[in-house]
Length: 221
Length: 389
Image 1 (tube, helix red, strand yellow):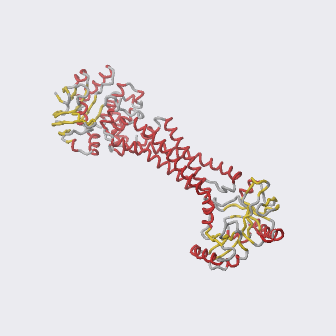
Image 2 (cartoon, rainbow over the protein chains, first blue to last red):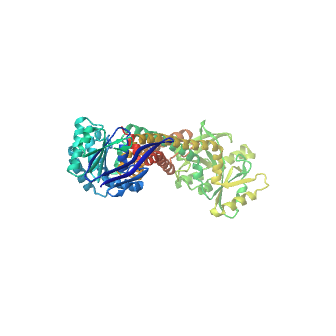
Image 3 (cartoon, each protein chain N blue to C red):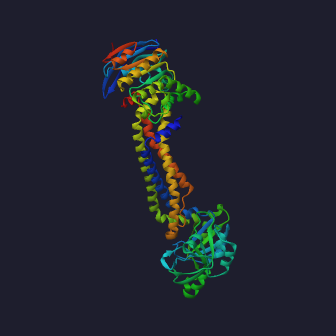
């Protein structure tokens, strides 16, 4: 299994009140899987995604990705681990508005020891996969929502991560753009053998996944 | 694409905001530079003081005279290499508003004691020979359009009457701090007239200027000189030239303290201006910092971005301020020399002030970036990402 979530619970504090978000979650995701996590708002799916991606830590339980227990890593080690193993796709693309498409995709590579020439090669390859080589010098505000999300996908895959996590990747897109993004994710999974975990509300998006798991009130059904 | 490029692009993201903040800093730096230069102008006499020159005056007050007869006794004190003397003249030129410092001095020893007054040898020789001649500083000569050979009349106040002089030399200052707004003439010219018109005031001087062979002898010479005239009708107070100058400054000590406080307040204000900008900027970019952290960027990267932007704005503002300050102070200097030359004979921005202004700008940049940096670094990624959209 690429991802192993065992007996994970997570709660948030609001004042003195403790609000449980995830309760005793167990999940195993094999390599090459395209998993959709579905559920209503506040059900805990994004929290689980964050735990798997190493940007949050559970109260109890373990999360192992590719054999590494990410719950035991320090913040500094987690940052390095994320840079090497995780590709992120966000609902609102989260591109740097002052950077071109090329520079946005290049961002994660700045943390590597690659030369400028090697970085360029990787960025061009990633933009080629998402079909935006002709837009590489465009700034985010010069791109459509669908194109922005494709740039974000290029940024997510440019380091060739072990796992791609996508949080509502079509949530802010029109139907046509959403279809393009889903087709692209499907291609990443099938053609490039990327393991993808996607959080979504959209049943059409979930259809593209191999497996869909449903959340309700912090419990995985 | 490196962090520096991202810092530059972030700084230019809100051009108007960054520009206005930099202008705010520039204005504050101008005010800081101006205020510091005013303080320096007060201390210019102190800065120009020699370590081995002493001033002896009447212990009661500077306005009380000392007998010329003291000169020989002072000269015989071991360690004293040269003694000169002078008298504050305090006359006005044409009108009372045309005041400038005038001193009646023993010219030969005075010029030996004050080598910082640079006078061409030919002019010096002529000055020494002619009893009614005088030398004037370059700034004073420029102010009234005087040249060597010109004559002018002073109207005496402490020493009543009309006093005519012929200019035989125009001296330049060896150092930037040397006063070029004063006039020096023969003490004998004054004394001869007093001998005829006010005999009781003849044979008296205001201050002795003493040169000491070595700095190590200064304390001993001060004690021995004053000991010579203990219990006499005119007891003396001897002090270093620096202390003598400081005693004048202490009269306006409150003003200087106020100016100093204002210069610090000015820096505090620019700190608030920049801190406000950086807090606003940082708050707007919380999601971006969260994304960068998600991608694996570490706290020092985030700190570099925020501090980089803060320091860039501060330095641009600081440099802009200094660029304006330097010609502005030059303009003030010309104005002051023409209108208030006797108050501020030297009004120039010093390298220390330039360095202090840039250090202040840099410090403001650092401090203003601290709070947003700490917030951004401490922020949980999941909280930062939630602020999107």
